Length: 245
Image 1: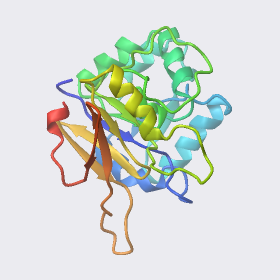
Image 2: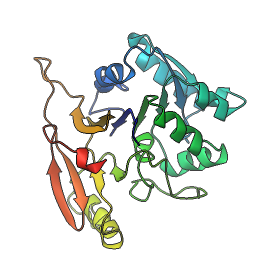
Image 3: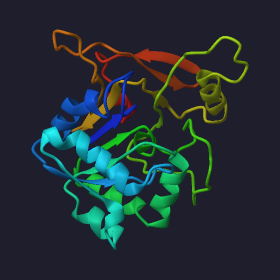
Image 4: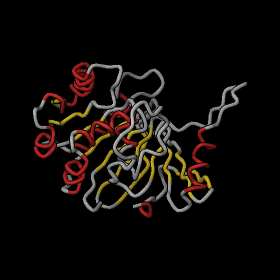
Protein backbone atom coordinates (compact mmCIF):
# COMPACT_ATOMS: atom_id res chain seq x y z
CA UNK A 1 0.00 0.00 0.00
CA UNK A 2 1.78 3.08 -1.32
CA UNK A 3 1.10 5.58 1.45
CA UNK A 4 0.97 3.18 4.41
CA UNK A 5 2.20 4.73 7.65
CA UNK A 6 2.18 1.83 10.09
CA UNK A 7 3.62 0.91 13.47
CA UNK A 8 3.07 -2.80 14.10
CA UNK A 9 4.09 -3.65 17.65
CA UNK A 10 4.57 -7.22 18.80
CA UNK A 11 3.18 -6.54 22.27
CA UNK A 12 1.75 -3.96 24.64
CA UNK A 13 4.24 -4.84 27.37
CA UNK A 14 7.75 -6.20 27.69
CA UNK A 15 8.51 -8.12 30.86
CA UNK A 16 7.27 -6.05 33.80
CA UNK A 17 6.94 -2.73 31.97
CA UNK A 18 3.69 -0.81 32.32
CA UNK A 19 1.13 -0.79 29.53
CA UNK A 20 2.63 0.53 26.25
CA UNK A 21 5.47 2.19 28.18
CA UNK A 22 8.21 0.63 26.06
CA UNK A 23 6.52 1.86 22.88
CA UNK A 24 5.79 5.50 23.79
CA UNK A 25 8.72 6.95 21.85
CA UNK A 26 7.79 4.87 18.79
CA UNK A 27 4.15 5.92 19.04
CA UNK A 28 5.07 9.59 19.44
CA UNK A 29 7.28 9.44 16.35
CA UNK A 30 4.59 7.68 14.33
CA UNK A 31 1.90 10.22 15.18
CA UNK A 32 4.19 13.19 14.35
CA UNK A 33 2.15 15.90 16.02
CA UNK A 34 -1.27 14.22 15.74
CA UNK A 35 -2.82 14.56 19.18
CA UNK A 36 -5.95 12.44 18.80
CA UNK A 37 -6.61 8.86 17.76
CA UNK A 38 -9.48 6.46 17.31
CA UNK A 39 -9.03 3.24 19.25
CA UNK A 40 -10.54 -0.09 18.16
CA UNK A 41 -10.98 -2.34 21.23
CA UNK A 42 -12.71 -5.27 19.48
CA UNK A 43 -9.96 -7.77 20.35
CA UNK A 44 -10.81 -7.34 24.02
CA UNK A 45 -13.10 -10.23 24.96
CA UNK A 46 -12.61 -10.40 28.72
CA UNK A 47 -12.27 -6.64 29.13
CA UNK A 48 -15.01 -4.04 28.82
CA UNK A 49 -14.51 -1.76 25.80
CA UNK A 50 -14.79 1.37 27.95
CA UNK A 51 -12.19 0.01 30.37
CA UNK A 52 -9.92 -0.99 27.50
CA UNK A 53 -10.13 2.46 25.94
CA UNK A 54 -9.43 4.07 29.31
CA UNK A 55 -6.34 1.87 29.72
CA UNK A 56 -4.97 3.09 26.39
CA UNK A 57 -5.87 6.68 27.26
CA UNK A 58 -3.98 6.41 30.55
CA UNK A 59 -0.94 5.02 28.76
CA UNK A 60 -0.86 7.82 26.17
CA UNK A 61 -1.76 10.75 28.41
CA UNK A 62 1.89 11.76 28.89
CA UNK A 63 2.14 12.16 25.11
CA UNK A 64 -0.84 14.53 25.11
CA UNK A 65 -2.92 12.11 23.02
CA UNK A 66 -6.71 12.03 23.30
CA UNK A 67 -8.11 8.51 22.80
CA UNK A 68 -11.69 7.80 21.75
CA UNK A 69 -13.15 4.31 21.40
CA UNK A 70 -14.87 3.42 18.13
CA UNK A 71 -17.62 1.68 20.10
CA UNK A 72 -18.74 5.09 21.33
CA UNK A 73 -19.88 6.08 17.83
CA UNK A 74 -23.25 5.23 16.32
CA UNK A 75 -21.62 4.96 12.87
CA UNK A 76 -18.23 3.19 13.05
CA UNK A 77 -17.49 3.75 9.35
CA UNK A 78 -17.92 7.51 9.73
CA UNK A 79 -15.68 7.38 12.79
CA UNK A 80 -12.93 5.73 10.74
CA UNK A 81 -13.38 8.22 7.91
CA UNK A 82 -12.91 11.13 10.31
CA UNK A 83 -10.07 9.65 12.36
CA UNK A 84 -6.73 11.51 12.35
CA UNK A 85 -5.04 8.27 13.46
CA UNK A 86 -6.14 4.70 14.19
CA UNK A 87 -4.95 2.34 16.92
CA UNK A 88 -5.98 -1.31 17.29
CA UNK A 89 -5.27 -3.18 20.51
CA UNK A 90 -4.44 -6.77 21.33
CA UNK A 91 -6.59 -9.62 22.53
CA UNK A 92 -8.29 -12.27 20.44
CA UNK A 93 -7.55 -11.88 16.73
CA UNK A 94 -10.59 -13.89 15.61
CA UNK A 95 -13.02 -11.71 17.55
CA UNK A 96 -11.27 -8.57 16.33
CA UNK A 97 -11.58 -9.56 12.68
CA UNK A 98 -15.15 -10.76 13.19
CA UNK A 99 -16.16 -7.35 14.55
CA UNK A 100 -14.37 -5.53 11.74
CA UNK A 101 -16.39 -7.51 9.20
CA UNK A 102 -19.63 -7.11 11.17
CA UNK A 103 -19.18 -3.34 11.26
CA UNK A 104 -18.07 -3.16 7.60
CA UNK A 105 -14.76 -1.56 8.53
CA UNK A 106 -12.28 -3.48 6.34
CA UNK A 107 -12.53 -1.22 3.29
CA UNK A 108 -12.87 1.91 5.42
CA UNK A 109 -9.59 1.21 7.24
CA UNK A 110 -7.84 0.25 4.01
CA UNK A 111 -8.94 3.53 2.44
CA UNK A 112 -7.72 5.62 5.39
CA UNK A 113 -4.35 3.87 5.46
CA UNK A 114 -3.99 4.44 1.71
CA UNK A 115 -4.38 8.17 2.44
CA UNK A 116 -1.42 8.05 4.84
CA UNK A 117 -3.40 8.04 8.09
CA UNK A 118 -1.19 6.62 10.88
CA UNK A 119 -2.15 3.08 11.95
CA UNK A 120 -0.75 1.69 15.20
CA UNK A 121 -1.42 -1.91 16.20
CA UNK A 122 -0.13 -4.24 18.86
CA UNK A 123 -0.49 -8.00 19.11
CA UNK A 124 -3.85 -8.82 17.45
CA UNK A 125 -3.93 -5.25 16.12
CA UNK A 126 -0.68 -5.95 14.29
CA UNK A 127 -1.74 -9.41 13.16
CA UNK A 128 -4.71 -8.10 11.19
CA UNK A 129 -2.47 -5.75 9.20
CA UNK A 130 -1.18 -8.77 7.29
CA UNK A 131 -2.67 -10.76 4.45
CA UNK A 132 -4.70 -13.02 6.72
CA UNK A 133 -4.93 -14.13 10.35
CA UNK A 134 -3.83 -17.68 9.54
CA UNK A 135 -0.59 -17.20 11.50
CA UNK A 136 -2.16 -15.84 14.67
CA UNK A 137 -1.43 -17.51 18.00
CA UNK A 138 -5.02 -17.17 19.22
CA UNK A 139 -7.80 -19.66 19.76
CA UNK A 140 -10.62 -19.40 17.16
CA UNK A 141 -13.34 -18.58 19.67
CA UNK A 142 -15.56 -17.14 16.94
CA UNK A 143 -15.66 -17.57 13.16
CA UNK A 144 -15.14 -14.37 11.18
CA UNK A 145 -16.67 -13.91 7.74
CA UNK A 146 -13.22 -14.58 6.29
CA UNK A 147 -9.66 -15.14 7.51
CA UNK A 148 -8.54 -12.44 5.05
CA UNK A 149 -7.33 -9.49 7.05
CA UNK A 150 -6.67 -5.80 6.29
CA UNK A 151 -3.85 -6.60 3.85
CA UNK A 152 -2.02 -3.38 4.62
CA UNK A 153 1.22 -5.27 3.99
CA UNK A 154 1.96 -8.10 1.58
CA UNK A 155 2.97 -10.73 4.14
CA UNK A 156 1.78 -12.59 7.22
CA UNK A 157 2.63 -11.53 10.77
CA UNK A 158 3.30 -13.51 13.91
CA UNK A 159 3.52 -11.25 16.98
CA UNK A 160 4.87 -12.44 20.36
CA UNK A 161 7.21 -14.80 18.56
CA UNK A 162 9.34 -16.97 20.82
CA UNK A 163 11.56 -20.01 20.43
CA UNK A 164 10.98 -20.92 24.08
CA UNK A 165 9.94 -24.53 24.62
CA UNK A 166 9.39 -25.45 28.28
CA UNK A 167 10.81 -28.71 29.55
CA UNK A 168 8.33 -31.54 29.28
CA UNK A 169 6.12 -29.75 26.76
CA UNK A 170 5.24 -32.07 23.90
CA UNK A 171 3.03 -29.75 21.86
CA UNK A 172 4.10 -27.96 18.72
CA UNK A 173 6.56 -25.11 18.98
CA UNK A 174 5.78 -21.80 17.31
CA UNK A 175 8.33 -22.54 14.60
CA UNK A 176 6.68 -25.90 13.86
CA UNK A 177 3.29 -24.25 13.42
CA UNK A 178 4.72 -21.69 11.05
CA UNK A 179 6.50 -24.49 9.18
CA UNK A 180 3.09 -26.09 8.56
CA UNK A 181 1.87 -22.82 7.06
CA UNK A 182 4.90 -22.67 4.77
CA UNK A 183 4.25 -26.16 3.43
CA UNK A 184 0.82 -25.07 2.20
CA UNK A 185 1.80 -21.49 1.29
CA UNK A 186 5.23 -21.80 -0.27
CA UNK A 187 5.64 -18.22 -1.52
CA UNK A 188 4.03 -16.25 1.32
CA UNK A 189 6.45 -14.60 3.78
CA UNK A 190 5.79 -14.54 7.53
CA UNK A 191 7.46 -11.87 9.64
CA UNK A 192 7.75 -12.98 13.26
CA UNK A 193 8.31 -10.12 15.71
CA UNK A 194 9.43 -10.69 19.28
CA UNK A 195 8.17 -8.75 22.28
CA UNK A 196 9.66 -5.28 22.53
CA UNK A 197 10.01 -4.91 18.76
CA UNK A 198 7.86 -3.53 15.97
CA UNK A 199 7.73 -2.99 12.25
CA UNK A 200 7.87 0.68 11.25
CA UNK A 201 6.47 1.23 7.76
CA UNK A 202 6.42 4.60 6.01
CA UNK A 203 7.23 6.12 2.61
CA UNK A 204 7.57 2.67 1.04
CA UNK A 205 10.22 1.57 3.53
CA UNK A 206 10.04 -1.00 6.32
CA UNK A 207 12.35 -1.43 9.32
CA UNK A 208 12.42 -3.64 12.36
CA UNK A 209 12.65 -1.31 15.36
CA UNK A 210 12.98 -1.82 19.09
CA UNK A 211 11.29 0.03 21.93
CA UNK A 212 13.74 -1.40 24.46
CA UNK A 213 16.38 0.98 25.80
CA UNK A 214 19.44 0.42 27.93
CA UNK A 215 20.52 2.64 30.82
CA UNK A 216 22.21 5.04 28.41
CA UNK A 217 18.95 5.60 26.56
CA UNK A 218 20.07 4.00 23.31
CA UNK A 219 17.94 1.46 21.50
CA UNK A 220 18.83 -2.14 22.25
CA UNK A 221 19.26 -4.31 19.16
CA UNK A 222 16.66 -7.04 18.86
CA UNK A 223 16.11 -9.69 16.25
CA UNK A 224 13.03 -10.90 14.45
CA UNK A 225 12.59 -13.73 11.99
CA UNK A 226 11.48 -14.20 8.42
CA UNK A 227 9.84 -17.50 7.52
CA UNK A 228 9.50 -18.26 3.82
CA UNK A 229 9.70 -21.32 1.55
CA UNK A 230 10.61 -23.60 4.43
CA UNK A 231 13.44 -21.40 5.72
CA UNK A 232 13.79 -19.36 8.90
CA UNK A 233 16.06 -16.31 8.59
CA UNK A 234 17.11 -13.84 11.28
CA UNK A 235 16.27 -10.19 10.62
CA UNK A 236 17.74 -7.31 12.62
CA UNK A 237 17.16 -3.62 13.18
CA UNK A 238 20.02 -2.96 10.76
CA UNK A 239 18.48 -4.85 7.83
CA UNK A 240 16.77 -3.27 4.84
CA UNK A 241 13.44 -5.07 4.58
CA UNK A 242 11.94 -2.98 1.78
CA UNK A 243 11.80 -6.06 -0.47
CA UNK A 244 8.85 -7.26 1.63
CA UNK A 245 6.65 -4.38 0.49
